[in-house]
Length: 245
Length: 302
Image (cartoon, rainbow over all chains, first blue to last red; front, side):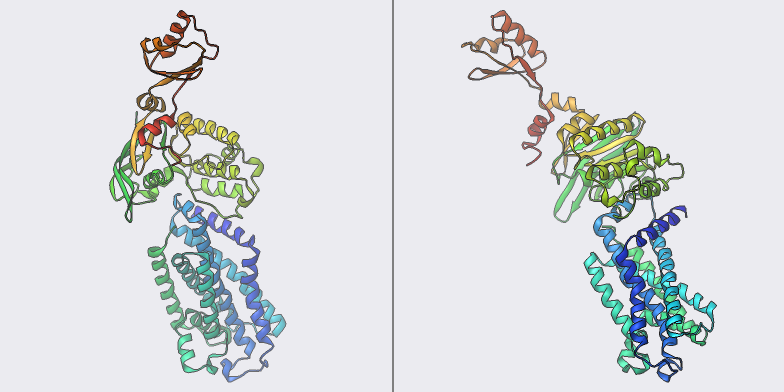
């Protein structure tokens, strides 16, 4: 436990010392917010689940913060550690793989919280986005969402051999998911094929899980259970497939 | 002497390459044990198997009474490692690395003392990326010592160090041994092996070809010492008859007498007796380089 907390603290400091990653994680969802905020008229509409577009998109962009950590940040982090020999050094120490993974999950939670709060505050100020209908449920939805994407990120980091591979594949997954999972065009405007594809992606369920209580539709058990399943499968696969060098 | 490490018939294969081939040796408590050989000889693979970082294909290993494969994590709590091609994040600070690695064991010594011993106190707040090669190397040895290990593995510890830093590192390694930590080191530097190791194994193409103290290796495999001097005397054929002399070579005024044991005293006495008094009479000791050449048939660079 002491080692886990120490690792978490050091990893958090390392994240703050890496300005490029920080900007990507925190600024990218804000850019989406401002670009799309100018596109739609902010009146309630059917395409947006009977909500105002920005009330619809703000929780979706919280999902983007989570996805960028899991699909871009973590895979690159692990691939870099492997490439540089950092994992090799850790492997020769008594530190357990669980502590290395656990520290990343905790760091992801902290970073996602900061990024999420930043995004919500900005959208409330700039676009008059309403406060969530059920704030406690939104918070409750946020945590398993981050954990699921952290697990996906660790799995990608375990599978992808090089930093380049992680950058390439991570960004592609990120862009495809953001387009099809509800953070791009509203699902009601997409073709059936696009909608179906979107529903195979974990980000779809993250956005649902956060958006539902935000807009007053309550807790979405299906999405919650799917994300738990994703977490378990990704964590087990990571433990099996993890390569130290 | 208590055995710290036992290796019996270790074998490790990568694809079609036999990296380690039937290697057996023991390391006893409190010694500096070295594996000397050229790059790719199998030294690193051997010590990585000992640390549980690679799975041997055959053979029996015991380190501190533990099996490196099945008790790997328990073992790594009690050993220290300095590995080749390993690193820590660039933006990590020196003190953070030491603090982290000393937290791995509950009763680790104060890392500030280790930091001081290895001359890193001045750099405690520096990022790892801003350290010189020597400072980095010292930090990684210090990290290997952070959990107060019973045995420490050092893989090419002094590569990348300047001569002064190497000598300092050697003194520190001796100090580690004198405090009771067993040291297992891998090197391709002859002088380092000769001056630092209590016992030494010579590794070539995956095989352990000789094992002894550096002096023992020299007297077994390169027993001949050379007495060298210059003289204008034409006839020195009588030198062949001096006891302990085995061979005499002459290149103009320069004379080289090969022999064993007290050959220097015998040659000197015989020369004086015949009225030959060279001013440059000296003894050339064979070195590990000669040992390596005579065992493997090539130099360590080949």
